[in-house]
Length: 139
Image (cartoon, rainbow, N blue to C red; front, side):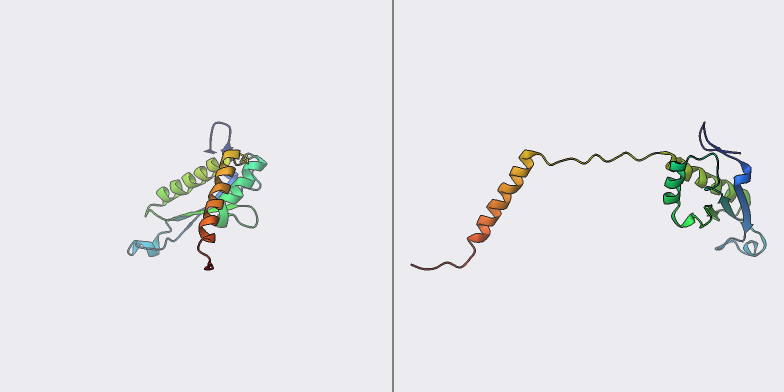
């Protein structure tokens, strides 16, 4: 059981972990030990997440969201399998917590009457300056 907050938790059947060989440094150990973790969370089928949270989660996950509605998180920073496992779970929890926060609705505003007048006055002044640059005729 993975707890997101007081109300939401993820059951073990929704998470699948596979251990793979990590890339990068590690000496001879890197060729023998599968220390990287690939955590797969079946987000689309999860009964614990509300629909709006799932849509925000899909947008936040980006490339990590698969076609069948799962999130795949890969952790290979540490040389320890247990630490990588904890890292992957922490990343998943952070991602879901970000998706729980609903964005504020933007309220469109109008420019004030004073700002409109100032803008038009500045345009008129600039226009007058440019009009004086034109060719003039001698009398």
